[in-house]
Image (cartoon, rainbow, N blue to C red; front, side, top):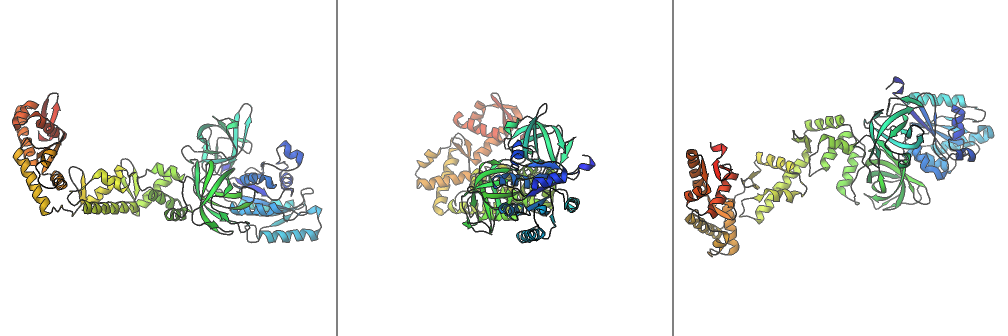
Amino acid sequence: MPEEQKRHIVVGTAGHIDHGKSALIKALTGVDPDRLKEEKERGMTTDLGFVFYGDDVTIIDVPGHEKFIRHMVAGASTLDFVIFVVAADDGVMPQTVEHLEILKLLEIQKGFIAITKKDLVDDELLQLVIEDVKRVVKGTFLENTPIIPVSNTTKQGFDRLKEVLDELITQTQAKKDKGIFRLPIDRCFSIKGFGTVVAGTVLSGSIKTGDTLELLPRKKQVKVRGIQVHNHKVDTVSTGYRAAINIVGADKDEINRGDTLGQIGYFQPSEYINASIHLLSSSEKPLKNLIRLRIHLETKEIFGRVVLLDTKVLKPGEKAMVQFRLEEPAVTDVGDRYVVRTYSPQNTIGGGVIIEPKAQKAKGFDEDLIAHLQKIEEGDPTVMVEENLLSNFNIARKIDEIALDLNLPLDKVRSIVEQLIEEHKVVCIDKKRGLYYAMDNIQKLMSAIEKELKQYHAANSTNIGMPQLELQKSISRGLDKILYNHVTGRLVTDKKIKTTADNKVSLFNFTVKLDKQLDDIGKKINDLFVDARFKPPDLQTVLAQHLGLERDVQKAYKYLIESGTLIDVGESVVFHKKFVEDAQNNIIAFLKKNKEIKVSEFRDMIGASRKYALPLLIYFDTHNVTIKRGEVRLLGQKYR
């Protein structure tokens, strides 16, 4: 980008209707900011006006009438500083106060005061108005700022006004660049031969001609055909600049003020937004739960209901955590300022800062949610990344997923994650896939697994262990298998748990304790299978022997299988382990000598029918003792 475009300032006016805001800008620049025919005919600003002051300053003129407060907020949301206008012949009026409250809620930090129409009053009245203005701005960012009486007609006082304006322009720093392109749209029009043009202030990132962006909340991709800054064609535009962008891929009728142009994949539209709110002391009533409000988000006005998260009723002058349930999806970002007004009659009652732009539906008094919001309220990227990982208990996260969640640049997130790994707050659980997880959650998972196994052993003292899948689901139904395997692997390494070949899990020091009755039944079942050799009984046959109470026989039978004394080879066929080992040794010796074996040959080898021989052969296949090739078996690779 050319050197002269590295810094751009957006200045705005504020003040009551007919106090000379537009006339002041025209006297200052020679350009009338009222661009609509209706505005010129009525002599009243109804929408935003835009005028250039020098090469790198845009002045936004806002309407002063109470009916057009939504336009005023749309204009004021991107200002670097404000020219606060009060007419000498009127003094402080309702929208004087309301505009000041809005500027405070939007956290505008700089500005100065212009007292217009000084030529219409005498010095005594002018001084009274100045004193009244001082009273109103006391305790605000405008306290102790220059108060400059001017005449828009004679231009008296304009030398001083320009001097203060230029000084503030010089002092103003470029907007902080988050690195992800976003432009809230405040104007949209069509130019013959070019098509759709959208305009607004770039809040972060940069783009160049030819880039593809996303039109939100429609999530429609558009291409940048051309860019203008201050009526000059440029190839790129960056943070802080007012820009007119010629786009291809969307018609003018598809775009509204309040829509957003954003970098693809970021800034997901959401109907749920978590925020902090400050209710103005001047608010006439407390804020009640689920009341319908007008919510001003950047250049958009949207209706929604407020859910109070940490209080039942919010009193004037107090602050709270809230969730907005919007009537249509909106696009916001962490740290955005907003203003709320009552639905009817329309009064500004408060505002605050967006904490979570893409929230889940929440209820009040969720202590974990409140604590989470309090941590990330300041918008510290490191805290946000850590909290993102902590809030994802069931899954590990990739760097790009975190970046998209938080609207942060990929390199920034990667750097933060590396820092958190050094601080032992985050661990990489899978380098190949690039999966990261919070160490605090690792500890919680490990504790949860140990607790679940302890409870399982207490209720199932004759079971060798808990099936892996059952354990995984009991901890959390959405728990990712990769994450589960990582945590159980840690527990095995730490000798906190142990696993069996058939995917059972137990606490490391757990041993099955059979009482004498179950032990006696187990011995009898063992003898049955030893005597049966390769013609073993099924469970029903075992139960028919009346070795004890049916439930005790089933427990003892299950224990023998889990302990490995009996081996379930499939198809309801169970052998004593001694004969499985004998058959395995025999078939290995046979195949080393004869290369291949048929089912019939194996059947004769063990002296059993096909009913028992085939399941045992399949079992050997699955354990790589043998390999099936057509109608014969070959020796498995590990035994060659």
